Image (cartoon, rainbow, N blue to C red; front, side):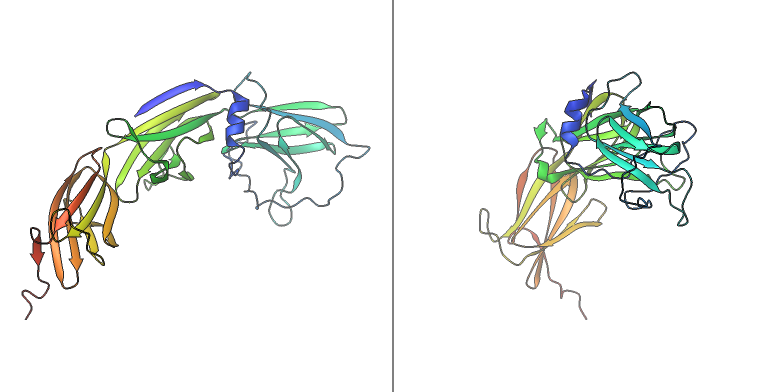
Length: 321
């Protein structure tokens, strides 16, 4: 796995991520709020009225956020949510204000609030107090970016449409499972995350070409990680002679070295991505079953012909009473 870390420029990262939907942001410890679990985007109580929050008694609060301590203010891409700290009758924290963008100015009644800033999947929460005098509050997200890609053996680029990543929490739970943070991340997409270690699963194709890696995200920096898949694209076809036409309506089964089925499909051609190793291919057409052992070599895409005259033919009625 190749990992490169470079300084993260906030505007560039934000522009790359404006199209991403902001999911449930992770929270970090701020002012003793490490155990606070804020609701997701539909889990909080709506504002009590549609009127302006600005009144003669309101105080002005300016909210800003940085990726790291003493870093530059983030200028776009932040979702601000302001909650009352006491749950309402429904058990949810009442949402009293929200804003989108970078640094935001809000007019709130004097009192205590919880402010949450989400930036992609990164986030931070802070307790603030609003008075009639203008104040400024800053939240340090302690966040960075992660950009993922993968190649096959020899450094050959993998078509993006055949590659997906899933990002999990870096710490496994008692049962060994890891909380899923983001599924189905496309290659070369910048994902904003709180700083820390993450478990990344790279899947090439849809069978067994899977690579797992632990990757560290650093605050204020973009981590670019490229993994190498030891796999190849294989297309199988049943023919009557070498170079012949593929026989239609063929049922395919692929068994791994232990004899366990890992892929089944129907068609004249059976394209799939397989991790390097030894396999047994079984082709069934009409009342005949054909079998062939193959070896998949990393980075060597191939077309495999199961020749009816050469492959081991199995009569399904042999041995029947």
